[in-house]
Image 1 (cartoon, rainbow, N blue to C red):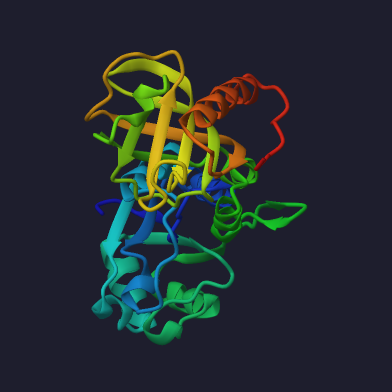
Image 2: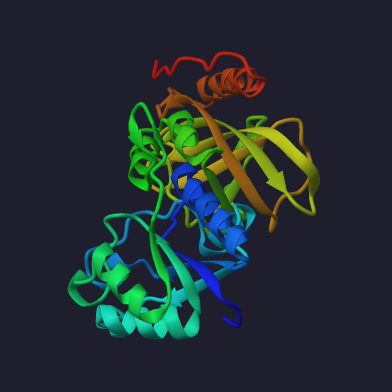
Length: 306
């Protein structure tokens, strides 16, 4: 970095409403002091490097960067998290990374922030080092609702349960999957509901089932279209391989090779096995109508597995 900064540190997976509040806080400090607002984040997830296993991603790294900038960051520094970085002492982390590289004049972190080798550094450590190195350590504001602080854990729990509406409350927007349309078995065309088979998805998948979605396909159609998405193993016709299939309502064009963004708005029902293709076709027709109602702002239909 070439300019004095307010540095905000975190993983920021999802860039949810809690993260957005911290970014807004840092933005206010940056504006008041004529500083650059810089986010310091890490990839891969520290837990993955340290052998604890990383949680499912809520957004891709590219999307994380995009959202961070949209919510107030002037610059996003993606620091490769390595065992060497994990071995930095708190003093080295603060001096070399925050002080020298990022020219920190203020550092915004959560009260429970830990840094340096074996998480030895605390908020008080950061304050003491800041006094020595020329930056102020500022406690991040905590945003939440009646269920508690907004957190990535709350979002993952909701998505795992298929409660995408609850996840959207914490995110501040619907959870979205992004991928490229691949060739499938084209069975959907034979029953009147062609589907786009989505591959390359890195975001956390919801519980198996059928969802009302909004679809973007830049370069194929403008704006957003309504759709129905099935996530699961298709027990009626397969029962083994996991598929993410999207039927875009009222669209007849070619989507092969297109990049889709699919926002999950409402869960319509769980995954179920039908007696044959006729029964499956009839249920998909009902799913389409239920999706139209859910996406049109009407009351979300109750989930039914029967």
